[in-house]
Length: 122
Length: 501
Image (cartoon, rainbow over all chains, first blue to last red; front, top):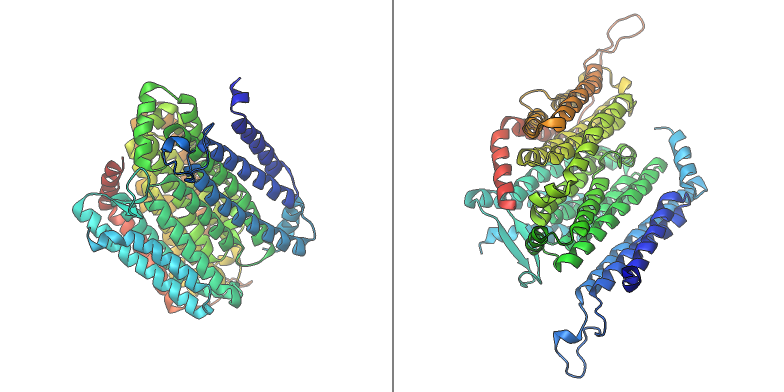
């Protein structure tokens, strides 16, 4: 079964689905942000495991071994790092917005907030 | 390498440096520095455009001196420079034109943050238009999203923050889908630069390998970028975001932020996956259906809108529908039509937002369409600009959107079959609805205000700042140039598209 061979990818897809449904179906803003973070982490897991090659080590030269064959592909790891930085910024902004909304509307329920905001004057 | 060839990278670097410096400046100085950055980028882009038009060739600029497939690159050609030129003017006029209202609506201590966000929006647009690397595109998509969300919430009113959160949720979903698409593409091709990916994809398409992953990649990237550019039915975030932001922010969101993603999508289709492969995988048909639905549904919602800004915002949904319908034609005329409408809509919609805001101020800070009655006598220049923009989007000949409608019809007829029938029907319905709501509003502007006895009330002219007046004149000139010199610009777009592939 390929699903069990590629278990990193399988886990990433399952995590993505969990994050996606949490983000889209939950009304609570904090849970939405958690869902979004799970979704992003799933993508990074998927990306990181693309660079992994069974039996090879991290691309740091030790003991004088310089053959490319000895190491995994470092590019996905570099991309994941960049992605994590972006993801952290996005989470920070979303949390800041949630705090702002909570102070104003005294709830974290997005549907309720939209309903109250809709009744405010244009 | 000539000096002018360094300018695109210099533009990106300059905007980034200005954004950093702006963070420690006082509001007035921040405004001047941002204005300087926009003017400098516009001037440098003009030089690069002249260079690419003169040589008729594109060039690749290495970042960090590592050649493909390892290094990072930007690519500069006729298509990129012409697009950037028009969008630079739009940014310039939007920033200066909306300054008066923005200064009133934004807390003084936060004004330099607003300037940083404008700088970052321009930076991400430059990177999206010029980049030759898909992961760089993803990073700047996220920067664009963060900057745009900041612009939406800058007024710090409750509805604006709610709109900002909704904007973020939909856009982050779009970014994630785009990133998964890029990751899968990297997995099956081993590259992130556009040319090497295209070569690998061509081989895969020939051999028939990885057909399903390729289809998935296209679907994920298309849906991701369609969500971010507010294609119907992913446009629920758009009206709130556009109507609750400052006029400059609304103008930038409608004309710069969403358009950057569409230019990137065209790049993905033409330079990354390859036009023929995209056509084989059937993605164009899906875009066509959503685009045609957006043309009608956006116009229907705009008819029902009570405020001017909401009407203009919903009209954007319809106009983005035009762009995606043109893309969905799957032929060269359709692709150029989509790129042309990106420019035409950017120039017109930003003018409508800026002039609409001036009319609202001149009518006693109202937002309601019916309160604009007699607006022409209170603010003649703003009313003229609004009327020109309305006439343009309705499709009056000699103006840019008319060219879009003619090209869209031509592309539909060339395609034939159901595409032609659906496009022509949707185009007719959408144009009628456009005429309904835009003419309705414009008529209000030219209808004199009368008191209860029926006597005409004399309207006093509301003074306009010189900078705002100059910006509106600039917008009018830009729209007239796009309409009257459409032949030359279309030729440049066709040439650019040929070099692009």
